[in-house]
Amino acid sequence: MSLLHRNDARGRHAPSWYAHSAAPFPELPPLRGEARADVCVIGGGFTGLSTALHLAERGAQVTLVEAHRVGWGASGRNGGQVAVGQRLWQEEIERMLGPDDARAAWEIGRDAARLVRALIARHGIDCAWRDGILHPNHRRRFDGPARAHVERMRKVYGYEGLEWLEPDEMRAALDARGYHGGYRDREAGHLHPLNYARGLARAAMAAGARLHETTEALAIEDGAVRLEDGIVRAETIVVACNGYLGRLLPEAAARVLPINNFIIATEPLPPERVRAIIPGGEAVADSRFVVNYFRFSEDGRMLFGGGESYGDAFPRDIKGYVRRRMLKVLPQLADARIDFGWGGTLGITMTRLPFFAEVRPGVFNASGYSGSGVAMGTMAGQLLAEALSGDRRRFDVMARLPAPPFPGGALLRRPTLVAAMLFARLRDML
Image 1 (cartoon, rainbow, N blue to C red):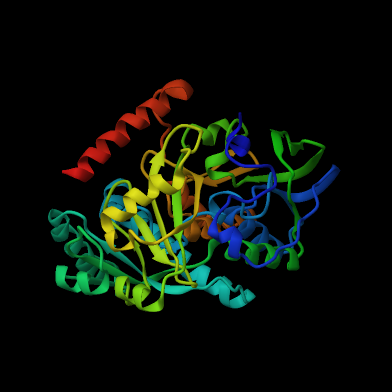
Image 2 (cartoon, helix red, strand yellow):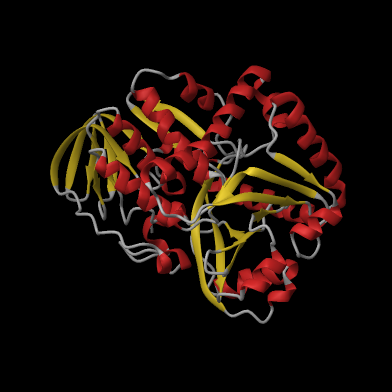
């Protein structure tokens, strides 16, 4: 069964706190019959919505089709963290690309977080933005490299957003077990991702884009997208499906592997308990390879994400599965009721860097954000719009980031990944 339908009812959001608390949004009609557009966008997440918005603002006729609801996939279920830069540290990207392309990739990554803020302000999107992400180290030996990274980003890239925190300073900023030093990124932030996605959808429609929900794309043909009950004919096609590429675009699916991740939300906690755990209100993403990420919602719930699975199905007891991870770092929440538990599917690449490409003439893809899709998925839409309007410079920088095919082909790449992730988990424990 397709991942689009494996774990969720058709046209319904996951049972998340985000869906429970999101501002109302109308159901958009499916597309039936034949439609024509300059650009057909497949996927109603951050990449697709941002692409539709930025192209429509440039005067293009855009039709977007989404198999379920706007923001249904990872875009509406994630941790809500808006990171600055690329998924890897700049030191690693420099080794891959050299200094010039690495600097260009950094500027794009920094602009991505700025773009999210700008779109929220420009379109009046009510999505509970808050400043800051804390990055605590779960092993003392990581403190030295992390401190050097903070200093190098200041000296080489002029980035003043990172603030090194000694272990006692981190303990003052975060009352959690098992952490040492780390750093705060003041330019990063966090938000309500489903409300943000719906805000982008409203902005795209206001700019003239046509959006259709419960409209699954079945195949990409020459100059057309075949649907369940119709077809969209378009000179250009943008595939914005991330972890749900499936068989739609094999060239991208070979490089972008779907994995599942899970989040729980506690009951609302009293303000004094919230302030005691994260006094500054930042989000948190730790140094584990399989990251623990958490933050408080605007109504005082602890939203804690962690744990991954590599098969198609979600665990039967998501709440229990994630709660065990939470209590290892936040044991003071043992008495907190768990009100929501949900899973989602994201797309990762071998290098943890996104895959941008014109995979066939007139068929473009941006995916594989590996957990950094709020900012980078939004930015991808702007870069795609630039490229389709004749300026490919920034898109081509991202296209030069290495995202090779997973080894083992269609049959063996998932077992290969599982073995690699088990090794990474062992490394986390050492």
